[in-house]
Length: 381
Image (tube, rainbow, N blue to C red):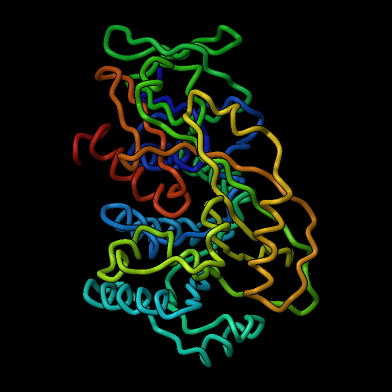
């Protein structure tokens, strides 16, 4: 008998397990695959609260603290090397200045960098691209394919979380005083509460609920470039298209008045914005694009990647940086999202669904999970 069973061992599920177990709960963490293979491991590994707005910025800021605390105990691959948004025209530079002013008012460290300062700090930026930059020194990078495995190992060793990969859940039912979880093997587990963090999978558990949830799945195309000798790209590098896309900038006073340059039109059609992050082995993650489908029709997005989209991303990336981009591999990632920022639904007092966090999971999932556990499981303690 457990206090809490969590279905899904991605970043959202595992951080819920961490906070619950840290509070003294007996936790079972179930993962349908042999190891997590969803959105958590298919992203950049950037922890960038600066791009978030509202409560998600607050969760993101708290996530930085949580990552830092765990990193002091075990190596999650956390590197605090900052985030820069590189503005490429007057509109983007205006938004960068306005967001900087906002963060100065609320006490979140940011620094405006001139063109010369940007090029000194990031000498492989194309000089013709750079107008200026907005830098956040507190922000972090992680290695997504390593971080989640190390976090799972940490919650097992430090807090006794019972982790069972290869455990596909096919049924969750309430009972007297709790809930029963049934696996595809017909094995059953009982707990006082069950939390379902199943990512973009909406057809297995409570499909009738999730079909009405308004969830949309986003398909992202991403690229991995080969290491370049003597190249160092510190932290997270985001660009003018990111400034035009991220929620924090959308709340700036001038956002409604900015124009879309003609050369951005095709990129905007595919939801492309260009980010760079160098992995520990020197390879460079570049991306990404966004295509959308109703979560009940994810198959419509296809399993393949489109070379034309990759070519668009590479052309824009080469407009931004001077180093060669020799692509080692490409892949598609998928995550669910909702217009309501996240989907939270109580089946009853014992069973809760939390999914549709969109692209915010790595940046804000740790802080959101802490809040959610406190409110739902620990009654606000």
